[in-house]
Length: 138
Image 1: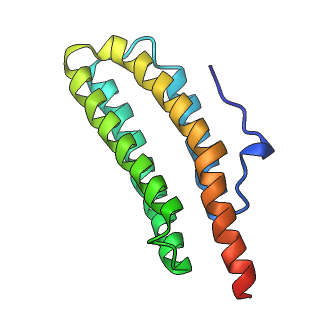
Image 2: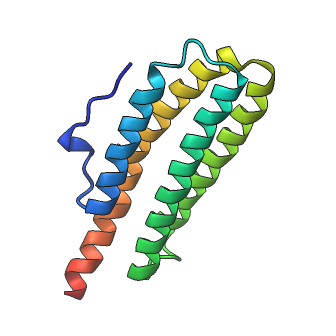
């Protein structure tokens, strides 16, 4: 279930692409553990992905603020997806208390699907808008 980084995942914004590569490495690191985790390891996984997401979402927010796009419909939709992600991670945190072993595989499946879709579709759209604005301002 490992993910191989592809050039197609690049958004054109170096800091975002670097963070996405770090995410793929984090996902791959945890794919190896998903079949046998205890409650402590489950919460460690959730903490790792939460810390990554907070850093990444803050980076995107900062880039959007710099570009003056905070009121754009694209950003409002995008930040709503971030809210959904946070909500789902909270749900996994609650689920893990009763079923850490089965929750790990469900969490990893969610993370793989959500992040790859988010990178390939949503982050690409947002970063392309950002790059277009930067080019017109230059």
